[in-house]
Length: 122
Figure: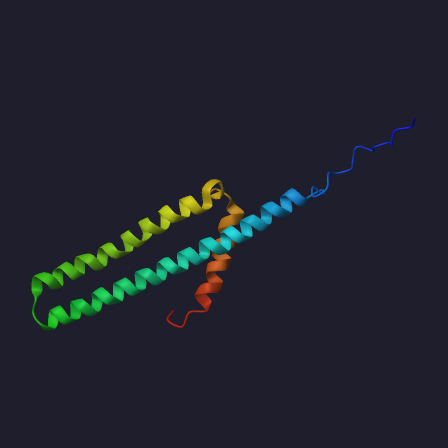
């Protein structure tokens, strides 16, 4: 009885040569889009919060509520840091073991640039 000869180059179904790399690149592209969207959303959050506090500060200034107006000035300075802390915490979880991947960050930058280019306020 003759057994079929294998050349040793056959791949199991679903594991064609290069498929693992293609799946990896696909995952990195998706992570880049997701991370860019999270960064864009954080920018929106920052912008909205900053504008709201600025409007309130103007009202307080006009009413001569000096101590509250000063509180608003401090709050405006803190908004950026608060938004960044939330963003970084979320990105750490999202990017997991890919945070050091240079290609991922190139993809994030490209995806974020596309999102920013669609904005009317920048």
